[in-house]
Amino acid sequence: MLSTTAAAQLPSCWNRIPSHLNLHHHSQQKRKLTILSLANADSQIPLENFYNLSLPQTQNCSIGQEINNRAGYNSNSNQNHKHLLFLQFFPESDTNDTNNQNPKTGNHNQHQVDKQREFKENNKARLLFTNMWWVDVKAALGQRINLEGILCSTMVIIKDQKLALPHISVPDIRYIDWAELRRKGFKGVVFDKDNTITAPYSLKPWPPLESSLERCKLEFGPDVAVFSNSAGLHEYDHDGSKARMLEGAVGIKVIRHRVKKPAGTAEEIEKHFGCEASQLIMVGDRPFTDVVYGNRNGFLTILTEPLSLAEEPFIVKQVRKLETSFVTYWSRRGLKPLGQKLLPDPMPCVKEPYP
Image: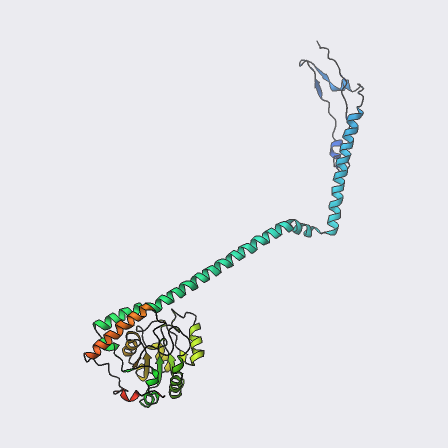
């Protein structure tokens, strides 16, 4: 038995379907009857029985919904219109580029790239500065501590004391007769730099010696060179800048090399002069450095006194005193220097300097 049910007036709202929505396929579908379930679950009344009911329309709901729908439609239409207008002025490719490269984003990315580049450049500069600083420190230590020299000097003291004795000893190069040495058959002259022809670490010639250097170049021409443990040594002068400055100031070629005196051979020097070391003259102020190197390789060795001790490092001063003490002691004991075939008697090559 069917239970009575109170039929209430249901408000009906109608909405206008926007024309831009493609809902054509919905209109073609057949309406199907549905079953309206009432309070009594045992009975079901077909919906077609309610088609004859007249339900009044509620104007408040329909008008409000229509206004909202029209507003949404107008908004969508305006957006579509703006989009079409934008596409007319800016092609799609430009739009994509604009989307991909937002000015703010682009500026931010460019700023990040610039910061990274600046950071890398700063790191390179810092690394370069660190490398240069270490090279300078190592060069300064190398000038004060000659490990090769210490080892070689130890061997000289123990076994070969004659290697530290020069063939000629003079106060400075003004006492050397360059013309007589040339007549004896020598073909070239090799100078040490510091305290021999320049002050320590200076790249300019000692002024009182300039005239003697000019006479040496007058006798031997281009066959005059500098072979130093400072300018021209790769450890100290790794880019050759000091050698170039000295060459410009003195007018003498600086031979580049990698091994400190007294170690090493005379290969670079012989290659430069094109003759054997026995035909060359080695001039320097250190017995255990310049003289030992020269004697080991067959040079005529000339020892000069240091030009200036004021600018010399403390360690070098102490080592110099020790070297001089050994040489003086050996000479007093009657020890003679090694023979030199081109100059059996070196005394004629020593003279008083010009006034």
